[in-house]
Image (cartoon, rainbow, N blue to C red; front, side, top):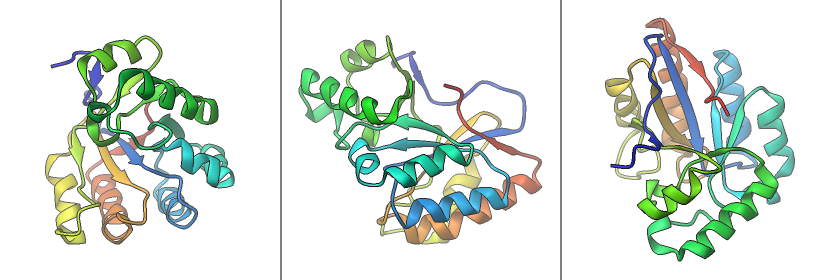
Length: 192
């Protein structure tokens, strides 16, 4: 276990740290932002640098609407499959566009050596609850159940603002926000 990886945020408050990976996407991300506005929810978007470069106005909109951003590499690289030097260079390339001290490794795959190196500059954010919205084998209802069942104070929940995840995520997200709000929870972005 690598103690410098954040899997949740210790708190007794009824707070959930909602996160989105893989964007920004020109159609999906704006829909997510509208849903979050409806519930006055803040979130953290772990952005792929290549997508930030393609859709800078969507990226700017995320920030302007009060959300935080984090680095998710430039090309969505898996740490386990990438030479360390190339991995760090890819993250730094993304950092020039994203400018955040938050980092989440794509697929959660990072070696201890990579994590040790990156923790000097970045806060390494993992997750305690994953929606599996990207899986074509589950329904939107199962996606919702995946996050409802395990959410607790301090949960870091992950969804994806990507085309592959859109069907499940866009159906489950508003129901998750509504249900947890009714249970007395608030949604916050992760501190930089």
